[in-house]
Image (cartoon, rainbow, N blue to C red; front, top):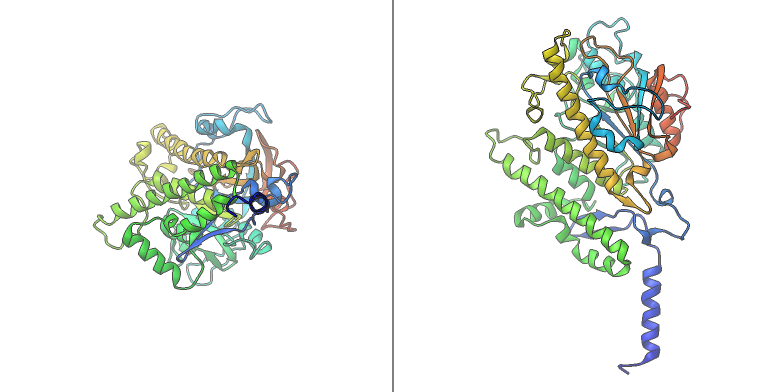
Length: 458
């Protein structure tokens, strides 16, 4: 019968049960060799009392700041919760309650310790390892395992990517660089083993494909070629799965999915535009997907890191914004001189003024990243509530090549961090911070590099 009340009730009941059944946190939208992870949804909660942390555990990120900073404009006035951000960190003021400025942390293994020159190579190599880099320009490189890889080893296989390595400078695995140190030390950030660096990926298109490939050998390349040929979005390939999922979701989740997919498409368009314009450059071998604008490049990589954390594609990411010793200029900040050249300012006020512009430029890009994290809503909070992000560098004063009292910010509220303050740790190893973060991440270790314990006050 067309109007059978019993049949209608049965159908409604089945629809209710279908919609009320929790969706797995690992659900993917699939199609034609492409796959799209999903953000945290209410429909993924197994019970009403489940928190976001039950479904989306803490994420850990590290962002490198090269060549030191002008410390008297970096370091806040006051300590504790009454601190005041000065000129350089002014762009971070909207996130004051979600960050800690950490002073007094040292990387003594970046000092010469009998090895002579090479502070830029050591600053990079030591920052995540806390180990003294072996001075060699040959193949016998050795430093230590980086903190991100210590974390990745503990959760191996639990996410699509064990870790994600990003950068804006092309990696170099060999050759002679700073004062007889291998270029591998200076142009890489993460180290899987003491002798095996993980090169950062600089092409946003490649990172995008890593995050959203179908994971079937041969299919992803074919799907990508088809998409590029017909100018299709990855969303076109997963649209059927998306429609099916849409029918299972409540109004709030449908809105969240629509917002997420819109964000994915916007990032795709940015990458496509960068690729389109890069094809007109004189050098045909220029990597596709890398924009001319340094600011645009940095922000694309931050967008990808947010997507990776939001979708649970990985819980660990590193971003080498620029290698230490980088001499890039900053058109967006109105600075034509090279950064490394300016960092040896010799107390020249004109050079210091230009350095302040560069320092603020990097702070503005980090503020963009925090804006994106804060904008991803999860339950009653945001993605900011479950991240721990270290933003800092291996030099304090670039003019003197000092590796003590480093510029360090710890952003996010993940792992129970006590945010919203300036804390001076007065000469403790930077690696003590890493021991504490690994514990909060769920990957406790006895030691990282030259650590002497953990920081109780984070």
